[in-house]
Image 1: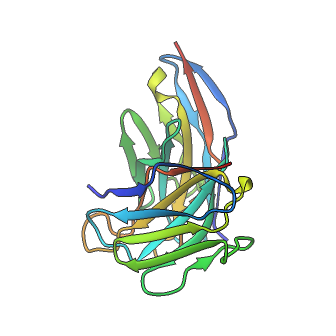
Image 2: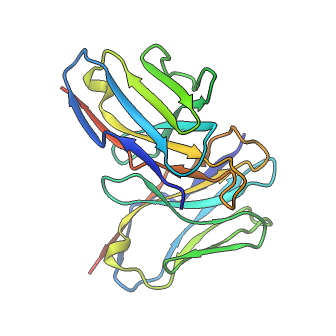
Length: 119
Length: 114
């Protein structure tokens, strides 16, 4: 079945450093991936839509210079949290839309999430 | 725009009790409807889905029927287990637009006690 992986699953970093999170679709191609942020006991907040080969589309209120998104191939999108601060600590989840010709067409599959803790 | 409203939790049930989590939606087109489950500390897993009116999605004893006339997709399970304790998200997807993300409800936390 369709699998999306995220790496790392957990990261702890010092304030002011940058952290890169990878999101990979393992067995399907995804021209579109989405990045979400989830605060404790809350729903998912869409941060941005990542499009392969073009610039990401950010949701209102999300700083594009702080959350850099690169979707360089049909199976990989990266989210880099630049100059991280404690308020950036959160659970980050990516999803990928299967846009191949199989039975999962247009279905979204989620990665397991990355828990970021900024000290 | 499209939106999803689901009952707010938390919901606490005893093992083997009947579960219903209500979900209604607003959409301009003909969306696909989903239920996702999130276990503690994990990402979202697709629980079930329905792509057109009157479809019933089912998985692991959970069921939900796509009701166009009431714009609803209520989640039900006849006998819950402690292992069903999780957060459940109702979501919709605009089938005609490949670049739009899922629209999620706020989630309902379910706790099942033995």
